[in-house]
Length: 277
Image 1 (tube, rainbow, N blue to C red):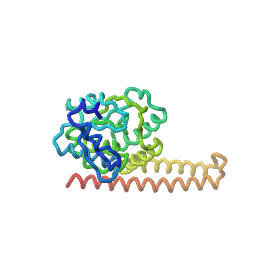
Image 2 (cartoon, rainbow, N blue to C red):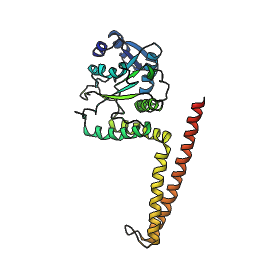
Image 3 (cartoon, one colour):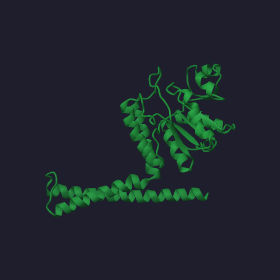
Image 4 (cartoon, one colour):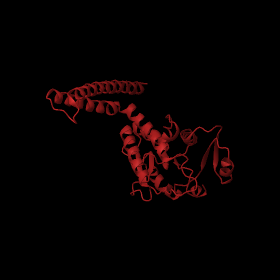
């Protein structure tokens, strides 16, 4: 924290209901401290801190994880696009410079999460889960979205992109050789975030999540059916099993397409209602 304090005007530590000396140590180091009475999770703690700055006239805020993986020397680079008036949210990307020193399994998992987030938010990003970010004044005035746990980074990108806020990325370094790393294992953490990202896709782009797979299954079923009528059997299934597969795929495909169209209409209606309020 002392290294961070050198590069910024103010340091805020959100004590998320800890039972140790977090608050005392932070205050002794010169930080402001917000204490949450109970452990509420990363999203609640982060949004609480951002809301504090939004209500006290700050022009920009930098977020970084407390495990030491982020280098405070990268803070000026994060702030530059905001101070130059070119961005409302700046994401520190570990992958813009090739992701040096990042384990392969993390890179593979991050690609999946990036793809899901980019599709849901309609904004291409290379490091959707980076907790090292800077938010400008316009972004601070839009800290009114809901999020649970570790999906807050994805939720922020989607919410800001939906409102036309400018999002850019800058390269940063990362150090995984720290004494107290991430509290959750990479696999369950990644699966939880992916589940949330898929939820965003379903809410924001239901035709893509349901309609496209539904049409693909429907088309496959039709092809199977035509092949069965032509006495062409795949994989030695025989007429009965291939025909039943065709019927099943057609039914599932139609149901998914109907679900996609219905949800897309509901989403369009909700967006229209929000615009007219």
